[in-house]
Amino acid sequence: MLPVPMLGKLKIRKSNGVPVTFDVHRLLAAANTARDRQQWEKAAKLYWQALIRNDALAHIWLQYGHMLLQSKDYDQAEMAYCRARELDPGSDVELHLGHLHKERGNLPAATRAYMRAARASPVNGDAVLALHTLMAAGFDVSPQEIMSLLTMKQPFSEPTMLSPSATVDATTVLSFQTDDPDDLLIADDTARSTGTCATTMEILLSDGTAAIVFDASDLISYFRNARLPTGIQRVQIEMIRGALETREEGTVRVCAFLDHRDEWVEISRPLFRHLCSMSLESGDRTATDWISVLTQLRLEMTMADALVFPQRAYLINLGTSWWLQNYFLYVRKAKAESDIRYVPFVHDLIPVMANEHCVKELTQDFISWVIGAFDHADYYLVNSLSTKRDLVAVGARLGHAVDPERVAVIRLDADFRKPATLPNGTARLAQFGVVRENYILFVSTIESRKNHLGAFEAWIRLIKTYGTRKVPYLVCVGNRGWLNEAIYARLQSHGASTFTP
Image 1 (spheres, rainbow, N blue to C red):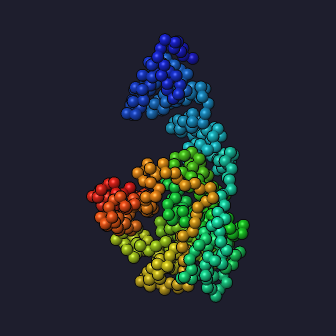
Image 2 (cartoon, helix red, strand yellow):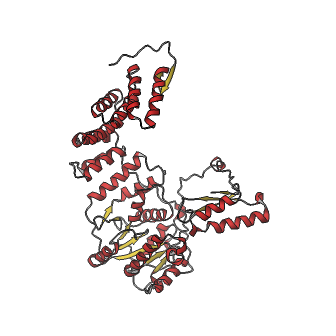
Image 3 (cartoon, rainbow, N blue to C red):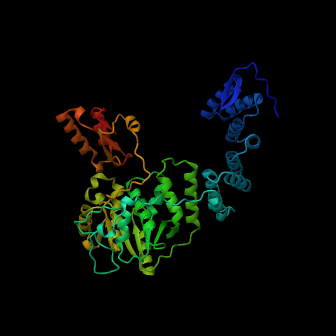
């Protein structure tokens, strides 16, 4: 144990909330600067000088260990980490010890350290992910053991039920016509959906006992790189969760296509519900609880056997699949083996109807996908009568006759508000210079096909006619998409106070 000098006459500062002398504080500031400049050896010497003066700073022992690890001084780095663990036992130290052992090539020691980190904190996504990486590399790590860590203190709660006010009698949602009692029910052109998508899905099949298998490949792929869902992801989440909650137990299943295995695997209902609920809570992709549940999903899919479809099941794909190689080959295989009915959701046909709004690669991929859909789809879901007309027209243009009677219009006008949802207060709006009564909201990815330029031109005409004080703000909310240069150029060329991008 290194001696700690008397602090009585020295001016006190704080480091990570811990009181330190002015001299120690000065050394730590210099060490942090060297660390930020990636001057690892210099930073290590400065941290050591601080520790000579006060060796009870656990967080500085940890930083000292990081600098030694970066400098490839593995023995001294392990000593520093162990000292940090003595002072403040915790999963973070074990995690870093795992990284150290892995860096040295000592995988058994790395595995033990990662396991200790995960047991200390089952939501430590970094530790669990590291174990999963070792398992995927063929090292002797049991998937069942990792799964037990993830579920030890993390039970899945039941999802929030749909608002009673959003549920209506199924007969009021769609007018339909069919001669085959097993066929998908078709929306009448004059019908208007007034309930939830879940209620719509409930009556899409005339045989209520027929199995529905939702292909969530697109949604699962999205979660690898993002968390908060956007338009199509929200459609998938709400429709699948609604079907899980309203249909008879066992008649709705969720799966994903693994392109490296060329087969579908099933995703458990509780895990899917939990994943979707977490995706709506925050946009933080680095949160340990989010990383943990994603890792559990990967492990479940890795361990799962190939899905065997129930006979005559409906395979419903609410997202996209043109990025999956061999997808339709295996749709054909499932049709031959299980006599499934394939039902894609066509959200729009802009890459064909107005390809000037899409990048070339997307247009090419989409055309390949839509030809495959025409060859394999038994029924179609679309979100509007306009998309239905486009689908029939594009099919004819590509030499595929699409029967309009097999296209169901599922309008996305349902009320998804949950009972516990609270509106944002005026203070939140005021951060953007907006008052509650004086704005119009435009929610969409910022890209040319959403026609922001048209909205901007309309607002400019309104301003010229009525003046800025009488025209509400146009508040545009969305991520940056493709071909948006003209949109931002138009904003910059006009008064910045007019628009809130």
